[in-house]
Every structure is written in C-alpha cells, then in structure tokens.
Image (tube, rainbow, N blue to C red; front, side, top):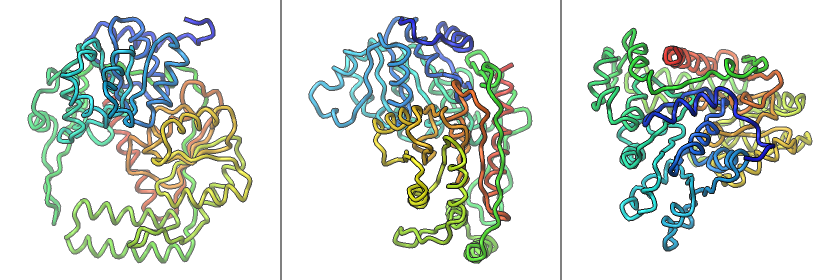
Length: 455
C-alpha cells in the first residue's frame, strides 16, 4: 500500500480482526468511527469478493471515496441503474470487480438475476450498511435482502443506530444475519418473549407492545458474541461537543395560525376518531407552521414568517463552516434567498441531487469552497464526512431518531479537531420541544441496549 495512506486506528484493526473469523457479525460502532474502512480492511485481508449494499446517498460519497483513498489497488464499481438494460451489464459488473457497491433498492434487481450470474458465486462476503433499512420484515426490500443474504458465507451488518424506534427493530436484521439462530425464527415468538401488550386507548384500532423490564439485557446477551461496538469518544481523542436548544418567542401572526391548527387537532383527538396516521399528519402540520410555512391543498407552500430563517442566516454568518438540516423544500427556498442576499456561499444536498454531484459537493465543502450546506436528513444523514463544519443547526426537528443521530455525526467524527456544537432551534411552547424530548427518550432506550452490548 502507498506510504501516504493514513494507518488504521487501533479500534479499526480490532473491528476487522473481530469480523474476519466469524461468518455472521454486527458492527454497531457509533457514526464517525470509520466502520467503512474497517470492512474494507476485512476485504483486503481475506480471499473472495465483496458485495456492499448501502444507502444510495453514500455509494460514491462514502464507500467509493474510501476505496479510492485507502485501497486504490482494489478494483470496484458502483451500480448504475441506467446501464442495467445493456447486454451482459450484470455479468461484467460482477466479473471485473473485487467489490461491487449497490443501493438498498437494487437488491431485488440483483436477486432476480442471481441464478443466471455465475460470476456472483465468487462473492463470499456481503456487507449490509445501515441495516435499519430492513427492520420491517414485511417490506419487499427486506424480503429480497434476506433471500440475497442466503447466497453468502460471510455477512456483516452495519449501523451506528441499530434500534431507532424500539427493541423489536433488531429482530429481522438478526434473522437475515443468522437465520434465527440467536433471536429465533419467529417474530411473534420474539415479540411475545420481550414485550407485553398495552391496553388500547379509546378509538385505537391496533395493539401497542411495551418492552418488558430486562429485555435489553436478554437481547444483548444473545447477540454479544457476534457484535462489536466502539464509542467515538472512547476510541478517539475527540474535542468537546455541545448540544444546546435555542428557543425563540413565536411571532403573534404565526402563533394565531398555530393555535387554530392545535385546536383542530385537540377537537379530533377528543372525538376519538384519530388514527395513528391522522395523528402524524396533524403533528406534521403543527411542525410545518413552526417552520414558517404551510402547504395548501395544491402542494404550494404559503409563507407565514421568516424570523427563524433570519436567525439561521445570522448563526451561519458568524461561523466559518456549518451544516443546516431542514425538513421541507420550502425551507431550502427561504434559506437560499437569505444566503444569496448575505453573500454566504452554500450548496444543497437533498433527494433531487444526483449521487455523483453529492460526492463533489462533499469534496468542495471539505476544501472550504462553501461556508454552509443545506441538508435533508434522508439524503445526507448517512456516511458523509463533513468535518470542515463545527456547527450543526436543526431548522426543524425530525421524528426520526436514526436521522437525528446520524445527521449529528456528519461533522463529529474521525478528522474533527475542533470544539463543535449542535443547535436545536425551537419556538417556545410548541410541539418542537416535545419532538426533541421524544428523541431523547428514544435515545435513552437505544443507549441501554448498546451499553450492554459493549460489556
């Protein structure tokens, strides 16, 4: 290997050496610890070829980038759907490369061709990055991933936030990994063993399941021998990281709109006819109002107020480099207008940005070309290294714990050498505070399981 390639950290070597002799492994080290490079080291030290399945957003920006940087001698290719109609595309893809990188949604495409692809038989290792994508056992993607996994002798599933909602989310990834050896082959048996049904609330059409005391310890004990986890702060000398809420008084005009929507939600709740889906819609409407705009029936965003965006502009202007996470497209428009007027250089990464362009934006940001990035968590929460930033700003909270955890580690990871902060913007006395509190409660449940797995 070339001399200017940085050496592996001790915890990355330990991770690789833990994985190599075992056919089935979980790697749940926190975001920023360099799980990607550990798995590339596993590939480099073992015979056979590797298929990587990961979110589309990090195919180039994380996996391909790390191969080019750390293992330039390894021949690889990123799956491109636009070429799949070409004759023998799949045969060439798997025959000419040591590592093939596909996204989660391409699993079914590969599975449909697996029997006619003798080249795939040389692939002995499957790496599934962000395995929470297959937590839903009934989803087409999950079923296809399980069938594909059966063709591989060695499997490693990665995620820095493995139980984003509750303990039940770990069952199907574990089943894909070892066929039910540790957590059983029946989801219902697993659920009955670790949960108890909760009495239905009035008007509720489904049963809720509550995790029993001590269940985290039981599950952790069953998975401990195949799980490796490192905490970022424990394996690297990380600078200080501060999380701080920043509360704004809600403008009177916006408060009136908010109270009208809140009253409507309360009336529907008191009527007992609100399903979980409708409750989610109502809560999102309240969050939209807090974001300064609301969508009408045609999908057009009606601007209500810009004071939160003006604060974000000022926070960004005071800092050399920062990241701003948003939840709606109208927030991109509002921030873009203010940034342009203030002379702030920026780029946007959301679902409409092609993956190759995302990689270029990341490189440019790391070189200092942009002062800030506007990011949507679904497109930018995973895998991207943005350590030029020292501040992550949440324009609006997200209900998604995995997105919250992962997004907050885009700039707090290996390579960060400055004090950093996460600023969580919220309007006083609104649903935004409850969403942030809810994220903390979910984090506490996940932390208990992960702490147990480490010991």
